[in-house]
Amino acid sequence: MCIATSGVIIKKRGHKADVSFGGNVIEAEAGLTGCEVGDHVLVHAGCIIQVLSENEAEEMDEIMDLIDSMQNKGSTVKTEDMK
Image 1 (cartoon, rainbow, N blue to C red):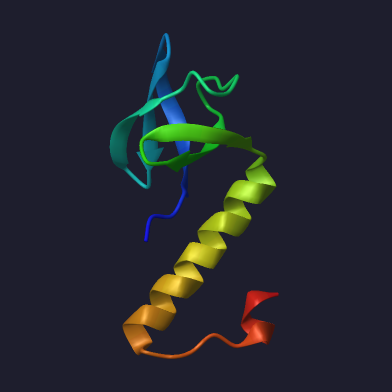
Image 2: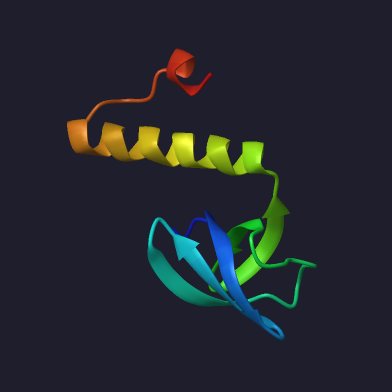
């Protein structure tokens, strides 16, 4: 299963952008959105598919951290943990 991940654009060259995911940098296709350097973006399959607000990016990071911690502990999701 592929999921979209949030990152920050650190460099842009035409329709390509370098996106940082916690220090890991990938090149992504940037031609689908009006993104700029410094924007928080959602990347799926090497393409920037959405520009996120800072609040949306923080929420995505919290959700990914929660999923990661549950996988490491082998626990199940509780609805109240997602609020």
